[in-house]
Figure (cartoon, one colour):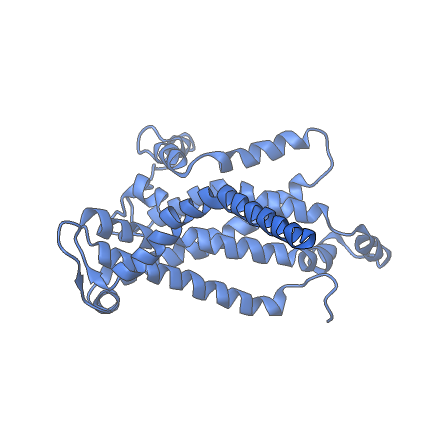
Length: 305
């Protein structure tokens, strides 16, 4: 009897502990279901319906997905604009952030101040940063045109010229290289020094050591920053929305902005949901491709050759 009573007491205590644990995680679970999981499922279902908020949803199957690639010329245009932006911003962003990390990895006096200065822009919100850069690109008061005038050059319509506007947004995106820079710095500071000592014994130059030792060892970090950069830049919205509204002549109509306009300007919630899932598939496919290509150039310490 005593053993049975003890067993019941232990089971009761275990049940109480389980209930207590679930109560502690319940706020997160509820928040996830209400603000993340629920909307994801709802958007997937809604992508098969035509719904303009004020009307009753009507099931139309895959019509939205077909329309994106057949009748909506702006959709394919927005995908092209987004891909150009992703290519330039990710490549240039990683080159600049890696270069800064190499420079700021030096052990010199006051290096912490420089690290802080280069990282500070990363803490500015996307909207605030976009407003600031819009002022800097201003025709009369902008710093860039004033610098051109001081150098005796003609001012430029940075955000109003179809040939310059996308490059201007790419330049703005490079303002936020602080995050990948810090990740590169952490990778550089964790490199084994014995390999560099061995390279010195072979009379290897700095460039040879960088190509043969540094790059292979930090290739997993490069891979991480490239993948995260692609995922982030495909979803770009704040910059074109605040700075250009997609213009001029749809030259900066990013996929995220086109999605937003369909959802909140034209109230095509079903069509916007379908577009969001196409964006997800694009991100997923590009990520899978990156993981496939990573086998050819990413080196993990300790792996067999």
